[in-house]
Image (tube, rainbow, N blue to C red; front, side, top):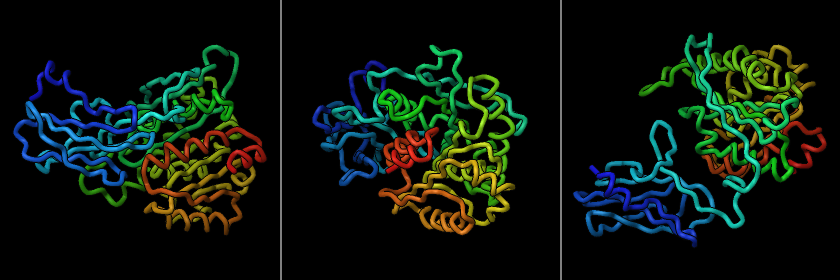
Length: 361
């Protein structure tokens, strides 16, 4: 057990000005400690034991960005117990950031900032209290007579409503794009995407279908009116957007097709529909075609969901649904969604079609 006084003397991670990072572990009884920085060349390396049982290793220099890492202490996985910044999933990873010069779009910059509001609301869909986070843009408080467009931003399987801010930096990306005049001011609503309790162990084969159906009801029947009641948001599809990653990308597709409530759709590395026809997914496909200003479907060339997205792209094309299917570099991870897709998606929202196309290109 590390005493409070002892642990306060040890820093991990320690990011150096040249982009190197020092990782440390207190493990006096351990025989071996290995660190692994995800998706980094030679990112797995051994730490060296020093005085008082403190293990230490240095890696880099690394290019600016956010990195995930973990330790193995005598082959037992663990997070960095000295680091409060954690990526939450079925398993946990620790995080650190190498700052850029100039700062990256994902970093805190000296610009006007929006506000994150953490809510509990009652849901008749689940008969329970549900959580969501709402980002209001910088001028929301200072311009009380203004109505704002709104984006519903959905997370992936196993995540929760905090993922897009704690790991995805959505609020900082929005702040920086708005300050640069590259994105419209908008509200961003980030709900919890598991209205059916998240399963552990073997997943029931019906879980996906049940959770998809419940999430569609949650957004359309509960959150759309709840947000309209509590915030000054526009009420037309032309001023509403929806997007998500992986499971959330599949949710965005199904909810937009099923409700015709959103004019702007983003499906990042999406768990796209596989078995249903568009006619089953969309009660009024002609209305969807007419009102949809943007249907943007990016997916990495190394993503395990690429073939599924290629099949959905063909389904949309065969039905004459205007959309953009984009194959990008990368796989199924936050480096793609946070650093590439969301920064490209936000500037396209709530623009004229010609203007959105120009920004996308």
